Image 1 (cartoon, one colour):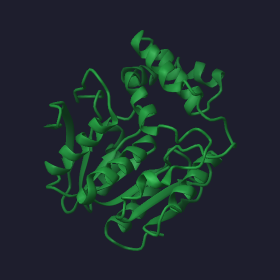
Image 2 (spheres, rainbow, N blue to C red):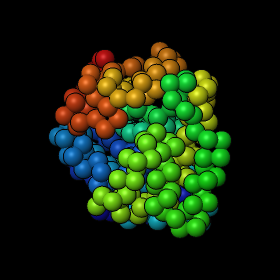
Image 3 (spheres, helix red, strand yellow):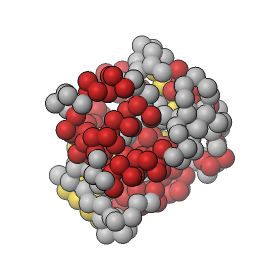
Image 4 (tube, rainbow, N blue to C red):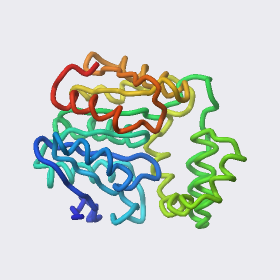
Length: 269
């Protein structure tokens, strides 16, 4: 494990393995760098893979006030530092939206971008997020009610029934979720209004001109595939890849061949 320092001085912990062109893996809600260990190990057979703890998680630092731009600066610090000034990126779930925002902001620093199931809600196939979703999460975090914050995320954002989440709270892994639950408002701010049931604001990413692979499974929640299709229609440089039988938690064995081909410059489909 090593660290780089972001523009605001926050230390960002990362690990690097493999050789060849650099790929940065951007995790979604609850994810620390360890969550991508298996995927990183497989990709490292082809690339230099950088995994990192997003700010506020794991071994990374944080700042008193959050701004999505700070997370973009964190990615830029990794690209300008260990990645050598240019990198490809893969983003998972809300991390996909962060990676997309960073690509739009950083110009040519990200040369290729792969995304898997950005959790957009653009239709009425499931309830959209409450208007006060981020504010309520923030209130829970401010009261240090981290278990309640994690539960609220799982019901309101993920859409799980209350009784399922009640069972999860008794599981050994729940403590790990509580440990990073204070960063859930960060993911909410990254998503912005893209979980409101309205069409995507695709003009927001008009500056993204590099090749973009948008992946989704066809066995999970239907709004995920709908959102992926809508994003993939944003430009000729966007390509949709549907993974048969996969859900939001995709198996690395299914994902790695597609990522390796895309990052190697082969046809994305």
